[in-house]
Length: 336
Image (cartoon, rainbow, N blue to C red; front, side):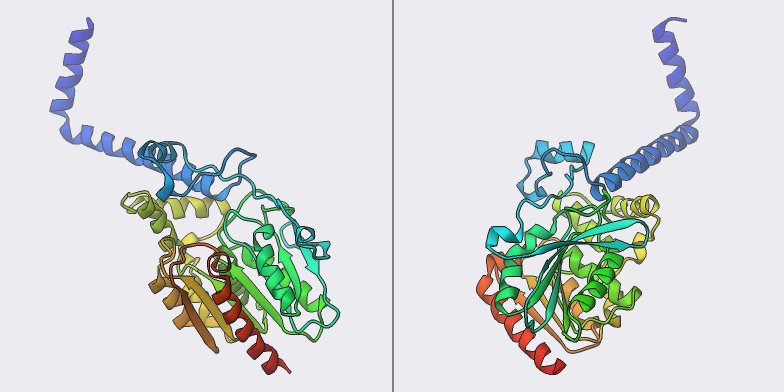
């Protein structure tokens, strides 16, 4: 049979089997969509061996967005490009064993008479070196400091991230180390973005009891923050956001739909300070307010004008230092 006749026969079959054709087309599209979201979930939660990190969607050209949609993001394994020594701060490197075979790298900056022990947790796609400027501020406030690399980041083992879920165990182990290193001193946990989520998770599910917590831009629900990623790309989130959370959960053996910091927050009864950027496009002010409202203890919310999803200290160091110093003073007075 010639090619034109074969095409004619195929077209005739399609016209006479419309429902079956539509069902096959839908099935094929559904399968391709699952493959696509599986790959994107993998790329967003597994660190690559190298290459340049994918830039923010707001900075992409149309061609750049199309390429990312096709191939997924590139998330190089976060490295520590600086150490406290670069700020003339003495430190020692420690390692923590976490259940599941994970080993965390920690920088310890001791103090002869610390007012408190502050433990700092970095955000998504970052390492502890990103918090060195905040570390210097806490040192100026006469605190001992622990800087922690989450699993997969910096000097810790692993190559994946779960956006604060399994990192909750990392935060809990670090808190216990802090209590051991500074007995009798209040332990204050500081986290940015994913780091703040890990703190809430550790309190709710690991049973730690810090003296106080300082959180920057915590998201309220994992599904919500994934939806924001699609919005930043100029795309509707349904159903891809739901499928991405589903496949990410399958890949990491967790229920991503139940990873909701707004629910963890109800377990927090210690003093809490939340700082958030007014123009944050990754986590809305309303979402942070929901987390704040759920906190059960003494609490304070500070919205930083003109700040996005970034370091509040880097963009408004004066406002950051003022809020943190006053909060720490209250915590240390109450702990005496």
